[in-house]
Structure formats: structure tokens, C-alpha cells
Image (cartoon, rainbow, N blue to C red; front, side, top):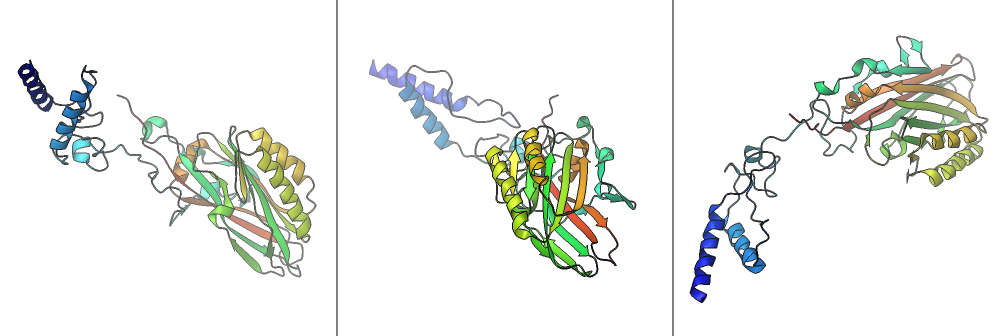
Length: 329
């Protein structure tokens, strides 16, 4: 009886080595030593699997996609080339600010000399889904720079902004800290770090598929304490309702909440509003914006040769990524 058992075990071992594995899902055959037949003797099965795995040498170029040791990234020869997106960067490292960007003039609010305060842009940038290999764009947008020139005889004051963005289902809010800006025809430039200037995609790159509306509102104040008090009140209410709260911004799941918070708070602001622009970016342009784009929001009030005037410019920057779109044939 012992002799028969040993013989059967030897035959089973030879068969286990000889039989090939199942084909891989994205390329060459995949050799996997696991069993799915639920054999009666689990100890014998486990021992056989260990011997087969130990004897096999994983080698790129043997026309077998040995997962998980090999993937389309580490061995495209065996596992085929990885799917790619032809219109957006890869999502690996996409959170980092791009090293270079290109202007997207169609989204400037001062297009061809016309100062637009409520407008849409990007309609001509749309691409039909069947014309691209990309899935939904994942986007981040920030205020990169603020530049302001003020009129003659104007004294130093403080500038702060309240900027909101929404796409019908998701909304975000950015509050900038009051910062001193010079008067008397001097130009003040403020460079914002990503953490203090991000208005969309604050928690993470946001998967954007609908038209995006951004409302830019900036104020000059001579009473910094009062202005900071209003911003603190907005921040307190926003923190209670937000899904994600940072040092300067808030992310909400419902658009109505954002409108209630801003509407009740900005009504108490008695400072001079020097920027009031609402921009709607077409959903078709969002994929293009993942490639690193900039545009300007600008508003001039009064004659800079006189007092009480200002010329304010925001440089807005977008970047992001998109995963390859799954194509079923």
C-alpha cells in the first residue's frame, strides 16, 4: 500500500510540472502555481506548488507574463505594452506642480481687449470620447500669482480674495490671507505656494467631467482685523460642512452649502471689491488643461493716474492627468 501511494504521488508531481498555466489577461501566458481544483489532500497540493514555484525562473522575454513579478511596465515583451492616454500626462507624480506651462488665451477674461466679467471659455477645445484614448481628466487648479498696481497718492492697504469653484455636484472654496499691497502707482507681486492658492483639487486631483464655474472675488481693506474676522467666520462655517479642510481651503460635496456660506458672509464685507469675475470652463477643455496651462483674470478700476484706482491680475494655473480609457472590442 505504501509503494502504490508513493508511485501516485510521483506521477502527480510530474503532471503538475508538465501542465502549462492559463493565458495572461494582457499579454503572454501567465504561469501561476496556485490550484483551483480543491484537491482532497491540501498538504500534498501545497507541497507540490512550492516545488514548482521554486524550480521556475522568471525571465523577461520568455513569452510568459509571470504575475506579479512581471507587468506591462516591467516587461512589455511578455505582458504587452501598457495602455496609454494620448492627450494627458500619466497620473504617476501628477500631484506635483508642473515645471512649465503654456498660456491658454481663450480663457483670459480680457480677450481681444474686452473685459469679460461673466463668460464661458473652452468650447472649441472639446474632443469626442471616441477620438481619445483617455479616461476622465483629473485636475488641479491654483492661483499662482497676484499682481496689483494702485493709483497715485493711494496708501498701503491689504488685499484678500474669496474664490469658489463648482461643477454642479462638487464645490470648493479658497480664502487668501490679507496681504499688504503698496500704493502710489507701485506694483506689488504676490507669489502663492500651491497649498495656499489651490482652488480646485485641494484634497486630491479631482476627476472632473462637467462644466466648471469659478467665481473670483478680491477686496482691498484698511481694516485688516475686521477683514480677518469675516474670513475666520467663513472658515468656521466652511469647516463644519466640508468633507476636507486645509489651512486655506475647503472641499464640499454639495454646491448649495457653498452658496449659503459665502452668501451670508460676503454681504457683511464693507471693503472695496476690486475683482468680481465669474468664469465657466467647458467640460471639453478640462482634458487639455491637465497638460499645464495658464490664463489671466484681470480687472482695472478707475484711472491709475488718480487715487482710488487699481489694476489687479491673477495668474491661474491648471495641471493634472488622465488614466488610459478602457476600450472593449
